[in-house]
Length: 477
Image (cartoon, rainbow, N blue to C red; front, side, top):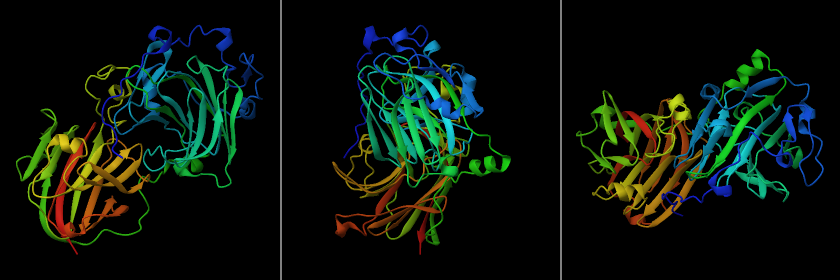
């Protein structure tokens, strides 16, 4: 199905369009656990379960931040979804996170063992799901890997590698649009979740996800538009102390899939150039607005919405390679742009909107930028790296029809780190590699008579940006 690229029109917040501040919350909505290990009166409406904090009372505090001051961004790493999102400090209300169409995640940089306790104060709005990751981030920042707790206003669920494994209800007397405390306990195979001391989830995994890929804690939001989202503040994490060897093991996270099938051997060179020299060298730019494709010395900055296509059709078997890195960029007009209290403004290489795609287009006519932006072109492959929050897809497109032929959650890029993306085309088949590791394999299911037709290749950026360092095209054996 085609994903909408239109902005969501958000409904205003309740109570006259404002959200109650964390400061001055009434007794009926006060936090059941005001600090780790301290019990208070249970929220109105029912008895509280034994606090999860008691099970971590002897563990030392390994992370404590109010989330009210920009320097906290040095201890966090942001992962944005496919269509934008942002994070900024909104006074005493706390850190406001918006996912826009997909997700925004903040990962705590410090590695954690398989046993820890985390508490964070939060308040939701009418739009935007609270999301907590008791483990992650998988390869890169892939939020579809490992465990994730989603919390809506009236119900929630636990996901394991993107698959729902348990659902729970939120008691009707808990108004999640008021300030509350969320608690997460991870104790080996057990995951428990509570709000204001009231247990909502207790799950035991027979095959728990452990090791370096699952050693970080994350918090964030799913969707939530311009005036909405989720507010966070006062994050604390307790965990047993790690030795230097344990910390090193959990810090060395693999950022790409394991080596399985190697790329094909390179043959005759068709084209090669540094990114900064591409404009005017047999490459045509398609820009939704001016200054979206900009040479900067040896590199080429490509911002959304724009595309670059090689002007000469290529027949037969070939490989198309791009060396690039992802850069952060705010959507024009987003509140917080240029402010010092935003994640993007404070740590420019800490986030990127991951919308880079490679194109394999049938025919001799380069589609217009609007067609490319809306995933509507006569026929061809659109390879999204990634499509958003860690999902990579090979899409077969013919006019208004789109089919996801192959996808994987294995990779989500980190801003500022160089990657080499490679697409190999052999008749009706493509293979996609990242840093020499096989990521996707796909075969077109329609139009077999077109399998050997010449194709055009290119790159597309919908939001955010990439810096293209080098492009190469060659025959393969």
